[in-house]
Image (cartoon, rainbow, N blue to C red; front, side, top):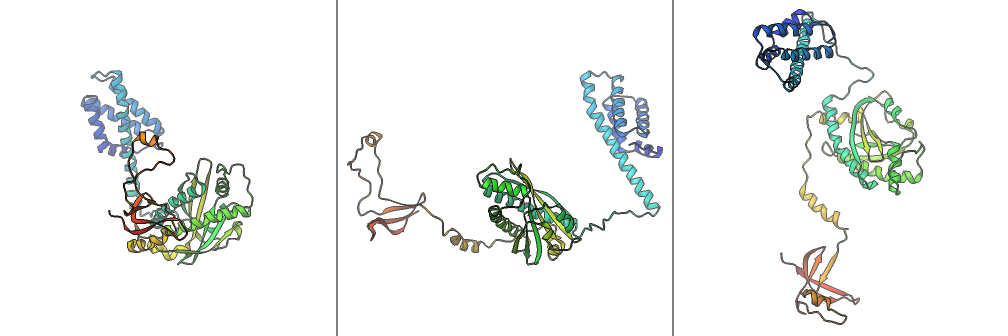
Length: 408
């Protein structure tokens, strides 16, 4: 502390628990007498009351305490003295913390006695329309969006892509627009059921790196100058953007179901007039990182878009909506209906020795363990699912007529 402390503050500190801990350390660790402890405590108080810089004063206090160990009646080895330094630093740090707390309490008491009001700064240019609790809920909600983004870009670029929440901030729409590059890759869309507009901006380095990777490159945008996207690049990034839009819908699902519509690509940020320039917006930025790429993806929510949802965001936590398991089970056959599966029919099997297998030639007959009237197994994938009878189809192909499910 560079300011000179009042003697009353030092006297109050000498009676506090931190100095009691110092006295106990001097008595038990250095085995000093009560008179020596009193002399040393006065010396410590003098250093604290001096106007020297805090770091210099603290280092001097540590040296004073350790130096006293060298002259104490109890003999210390060099190794033991070196071990005293961390203990002395901890004691000095405790004294400083107690002194700072004491000074702060004295200032508050003096302000209260004089009837002074505590002044809280307020920025009229950037008023806080969303409180800290709601901002924290938004950030927690979009942490899941970062994970979904990571999966989307990892699948599109066929490599590991890390996405982390960079920051959440309240600013004006004009400042957000000025922060974007020109040309840009920005999508504006309507967020239902609030029917408010939202802007999704993908930084141009992320766009060019994704296109480069999809077309067989290393996934780097270094050296690519700022330019308009070509129609082919727009087609590629539009496919990724559709998945990002789905990720946004999934992100809001725990709060309320949303449906995004009227998605439009805009390459000139100045043409995106979704709200007034001085309107407060909530800006969330996500950092996209690969071995060859680092860029931002930004989500801009105008205040009026989130205003109907704010009461839900004011809750200290949100709960994932209950999943209708019956509905999921009913929908699964439709989702999996187009999946191709390998189906194989087995006429039978047998066991032969390795020598017999090596002696097999063209024309040899291998007897199986099943007879002509036995049912054959039908495998779906690697599992036996059905039993059937071997036959021939109308087209002359080998076939198996399913007789029933296989027993467990």
